[in-house]
Amino acid sequence: MVSNEITSVYVIGRRGGPCKVGVSTDPMKRLASVQTGCAIPVEVWGYCTFSSRFVARRFERAAHKAMSERRMSGEWFNVEPEEAIRAIESVPGYYESYVEEAE
Image (cartoon, rainbow, N blue to C red; front, side, top):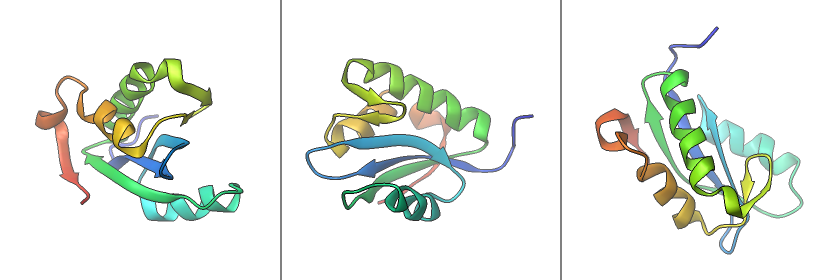
């Protein structure tokens, strides 16, 4: 079942990469769990909030596809944080779909 809960697509990583692009209802809480399993310090570089998990997943998948040649494993990509953010923002319909952008 797909949740209608407001959900964000986030970019977590560090300058110089790698970066993780995923979805969460609470990107800051997600950061804490990612950091626990990550040997390098990471931070939230940005996130965009969408009206439902379904919509957020569509943008996440499209961003993953756009960066597929730089995929390391799973949702981790060998990209700068800004490149990951641009991949999300370049998905057709982005500016009509997001509810809120983090600064």
